[in-house]
Length: 371
Image (cartoon, rainbow, N blue to C red; front, side, top):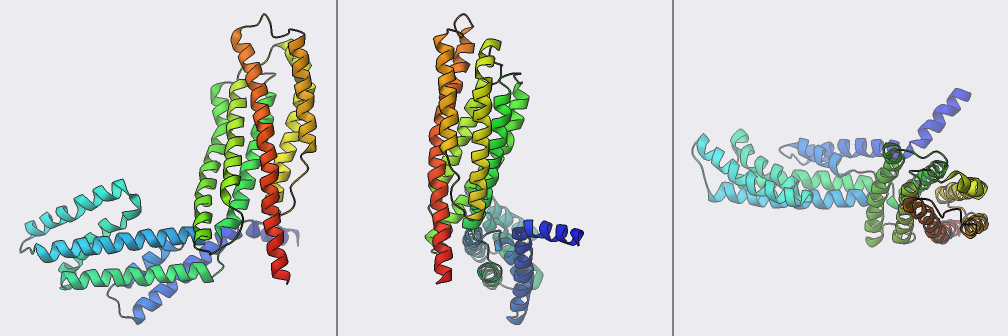
């Protein structure tokens, strides 16, 4: 029974990926059935298009469908015009038209990758008539029809079959990022007693950077859904900006902790820094849990208290002149750490507000569903 429960928990943890697999399967099957029923020349392209436009979220599917359809229509028009206006009678002529079709479209796709389908479509429109003895205009119409069937099928499946909204995904991604920031902060502050090399510093930061890129991508998808009125929820901008500022705080703290503080300063700051590290990491992890569950924001008062204790300890160190007599870079790191923690304090206050907004949105939605 325990193993079955563990298996269920693993599958549940991957329900977003499982939902995508189901949608892709349904989209491919439906696209092939529809293309066959319509007697399209190459049902393969309908199936491939349905696979391309069926994405992890509805917002991403909308963008993939728009980009692929624009590229396909543009490539079909250009490839068809080349084939009709410049007829060829030899392999050398066909080769010349192929260069003329590919070169400008490949250049455009290099500038705007969202139009990359145009090059492929132009080549198909140009070469398929040589295989099926069709005229270029018919080839262009067939290509657009096949892609249209696949795109519409994939988009409808994204809406109707286990739809995944980017607004829900952004909660999970933001929660992961906050947990990474909490782990990094604890490790960085521990470096004030032992220091670390740049390689170790980059190792700590790399995972946060990758997660931030992923969060921004999901945020764009969520805003696309909101603009199309396909989902509701708070504006993603404040959440993304707050987490980005917290990431910058971690970067600044990392730079200040490459070299350990002087021993006498460490002794004074050990207890308050340990409190700061524990309390802020706990707050970040609690905020991550609140985002996942749509619960209320965690209490931020312990963060205020811990940073006040640290500020008092710093004032005592300065009053006793423990920084005087040390190299200038030691003083710079000491004051940079204090400034970074002060900035983080402000940004944690913003995080408290933003998490509260997302929790209220979740509560409002639950209330509406219950009515």
